[in-house]
Structure formats: C-alpha cells, structure tokens
Image 1: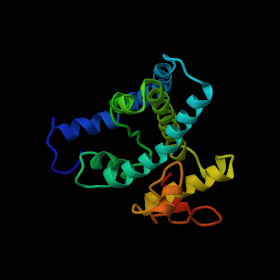
Image 2: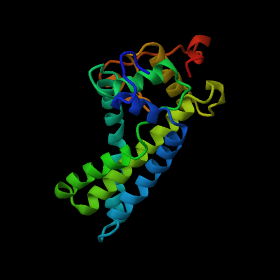
Image 3: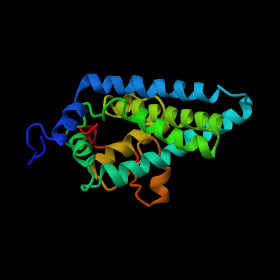
Length: 206
C-alpha cells in the first residue's frame, strides 16, 4: 500500500488489481485477442491485402512512440493516478504488474471508434490490429526482460534491449523505450549500457 492510502480507496483497489497474477495472465490473453478482433473488423469490407498490410504495419510501427510517451510522461509522472502502480513495479520488478486486463482492449476500441470516421472502417480496423500486435509484443517482451537473465536471450539485439531496460530500472530518467531505443535517441534520454553486459547489481533488477 502506498503511504497515505486508506483501505478501500480507489488507488488501493487499483494496486490490488495490478498485483493480481490472474489479472496479469488475463491481460496477455486480452491483448492477443484484440489483434484478431480489430483485424476481423478490418476484413468486414472489401479490401486489398497490400493496403491492409501497409496500414497494419503503420499501426505496429507507431506503437513504439505511444509506448515511449506513456512510459515517460504518464507512468513516471507523480501527478498521474498511474504513477503509484508503476512505482510499485520499480520497487519490486519481479511482482506481476498490469492494469485491469480489459483496459487495453477498451482504450483500443475507443481509439478505433474515433479513427473509423477519419480513416474509414476498414483502415481503422487494420491500423488498430497492428497497434494491438505491437502492444501484445511489448507485454510479452517486458515479461521476458523481468523473468530471464541476459545470457538466456538468444539474439544480440534482444540482449541490448534487455540491458537498456535494466539500466532504466537503475536510472529511471533514461531508456523509456521497452521494446526499442529509437525514441530515446530522438528525445535524448538514451543511456548506453556497458558494452560487455550489465553489472550484477543491474542483473538483480531484472
């Protein structure tokens, strides 16, 4: 419980949900399901596979900017209601941490309902499907970063990303990108990890 919270308060309830292992597992299922729900909505009208692939890829690529922005300016902002939940994750990275499992799906549905008037029903469906796929990948990759050691990860680029996120848990004003360091380079918040891996102290934060 965050200091100052009262039993039964909204913040305490959110923390309880966030730390539930059942909710944590259900979030992976809901996020993965979102990919297919919005993809199905995109296929309800006539379309070309080429244009669908392009729109889907744009949605997938743009997620990294949303990931960076939310992580930096919402989760690390003490003035937001999300800060205590994310702060708890930093205090104990091994504990499960997820918002209510349907939150992602609901937010995506709201964004889709707005985009379909500007992009079109089909395009909005594929855009959000791609965005949801990147969001699902983010959830899985973040879980891997906190459940494995760097030497257990097979690819060099994944090891670099793992190391960068470990640095973020030590230096919280750096490396906000969880799946990519691109926007950290753009906004000059990237902190390079040690070239030969990370120290034992950083490993303990994984």
